Length: 396
Image (cartoon, rainbow, N blue to C red; front, side):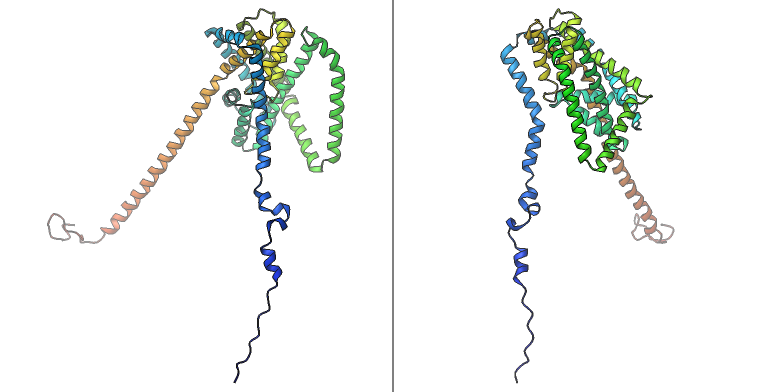
């Protein structure tokens, strides 16, 4: 008798297999492996943008040294002596303390606690990192992130640093425009000619940009803009903070101008203070450009051009700018002490915590042994002979 025929399973459609093993070119662009992992191109672009300022600053310095030589530069560096270093440290102390006070005021306006002593130490460290690392802003980024994390609000901590730096730049811009438009300088005639149309063009472009962004921006972005403006008003323009922010900004700017005049005297320039102030303002404005190597580059180029246009010698201007950069680095050296001290404190704290953990573990182990010992000797007779004596209750 023949065995009954069992029903066969239906054949699996071939489309499943082809879907599972579809080549990468048939997948959507967002799901392709090469595009998912292929972030090297955006990374390269970001890296190029990050290093563009360093490359530009290096190129400016190379061109200046090639065209002007190193004679005035080396002569100015040889003139730096002990009293000059002490004067730079004193000026740096004043400007750093008032800058830290401004930062503490802005943080208070944003409802973040920042003691003045902590602000001074963090500001010194940021100044040293700004002077020692390319870009000129990495120290400010570090203090913004550190303060935000310690305060428990990273975004607000970063915005406090941004507002504090913006206050300094606004003070420099306002005073700089007033000085360049009123005091004799090599750019006075040119500035008077182009300032009104440039200001009108800038205001028109700003108005058009804001109108377009307000039309295209969603409600969330508009709310974020209003929140940012509210924080700026609370941190900088409030009745409680505005006098202190304005006073500290003026003192800091006066300290930078004094440092420039000191650098000019060290470099051998005999120009009057009234002639040096507009040139110093131009140099400080050039330092705000993000095309520098730790602050070097545009400052030297603009100062050399300004001194040459004023009839004081482009080589002398280069020497003054270099001496100013060296004195600024000297003024930030206490930040290196803060950096080293805090690293040692972190290492000591880590070693102390490791030692405490080891001692706690050993204490727990010893306690476990002590608790187990009475349990093993709770019997009336010992399991091991002691000194050859019989195992009697008296021996135990």
